[in-house]
Image (cartoon, rainbow over all chains, first blue to last red; front, top):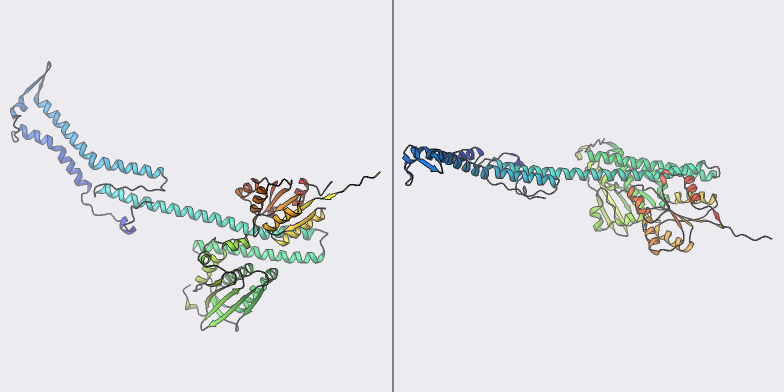
Length: 385
Length: 133
C-alpha cells in the first residue's frame, strides 16, 4: 500500500491547501512569455528596440529574394514572430500544465489496471491546483482501497458465518431425522423408543441454542443491542440451566455442582445472560474428559456478584488464550477433541458480559482445568448500558 | 450329494463419532443382515480396517483424533488392494469437500442430514449385498 498519506492526517487532507502559485498565475506567466516575441517585433518596427544587425528600415520595407520570389521582410518577420510565440507558449504550457496532467492520467490508468490494490506514488510538481489534485486523488484512492478491502473481508466473514451456522444446525437435524425413523420402526422396543424420544428433545434444544447464537451474533455485528435489563435472580437462572444441560452432562460423565450463598438479584438481560452461561457450561462439559467435574459458583462482593464456571478439563494454554475470543477461532486441541464446534461461542459470551459492564477473566492450567469468571451488578447505574 | 456352501456375511464398518447416530446405523444394517462394527474416531477406524478388513466402510469426515480425510489419506498411501469400498457419510457438503473426498476414489458421498438410515442402507445394498458366497 502506498505511503502517500502516511504523513498527513485525514482531516488535513480534505481541506484545500493555500496555493503558492495557483494556476491563474501560471496562465498569466505563459501568456506574458508568449507575447514577448510580438511585442519585441512591435518595438523593433517602432524604433524603440535596436538590434545591431537589423536596422528597423530593413524590417519595415526591406525585400528578400528567394529564387524567383520576392518576399517583403516584414512578412517573414511576422511569421517568425508567430512561430516563436506559439513555440514558447506551447513549451511553457506543456511544462506547466500538460505534462503534469498526462502524468496524472497515466497514474489513474495504472491504478485502475491494478484494481486499486496497489497505489503507486504520485508526486506532481508545483504547489498549484494540479499538484493538489494529485495529492487529493492519492488520498481518495487510498481510502477507496481500504474501504473495498474491508468490505471484502466483511463479506468473507459473513460467508464463513453462514456456512458455520448451517453446519451447526445439520448435526441436531441429522439426529432428529434418524431418530424419527427409528421411532417409527415397528421393531423398536418401547423402552428404546423412550430413550430415542428424549434424545429428540435434546436435539431440538440444541437447535434452539444454535439459532439463538446466530441471532445474537447477527445483532452484535450490526450493532443493534436490544438488551433488556431487568432484575433477575441468578440462583434460579443457573439452576434452570444446569437442569437443561443434565442429559448432556450425564452423557459426558462429568459432575456438575453449584455453590452459592442464597438468592442474589442482579440487573441483567435474562435471555443473553442465560445464553452466555449455557455456553460457558457447555464448553466446560465439552472439554472436560469423563469423570471430571464442573463447578458453578456465585459469590457476592458488596454490590457485585462474581459468577464463575470452573472445570477440570483440558485447559487453555497461554498462546491459545490470546486467540480464543476471536470470532471463529478454535484451538487445535479443542478441534481435536470436538471437530464440530463453530468457535462462535466465546466471542458472543465476551460481548454479552461487556454489555453487562464487566470483563471476562480466565484462569487456566493446560491439562488441569479452567476457571472463567465475570461480575454482575445489583444496581442499574453501576454500568452504562 | 450335498456340497456345503459357506455363506459369508458382508462386513460393514461404521466410522461415526456420534454414538447415537452410530448405533442407529449399526442396528439398521444388522437388521438387513450385514455384519457390522463401529469405530468412533479416525484412529480407531484405521485400526479396525486393518484388523477386521470390512468389505465396506461408511466414513464420517469430522471425527476426533483423525478426520475422515486423514483416514482416506492413510488408506491411500498404504495402498492395500482390499477391494474395500468407501462411502462418505458426512454433514459437510461444499463442492470442495466432496471433491477432496472423491479424489481418494470414494464410491459415494452422502449428506447425513439429507439421508435417512433407510436410504443409506439402500445405497449400501446397491453396492454390495448382505451375503456373498
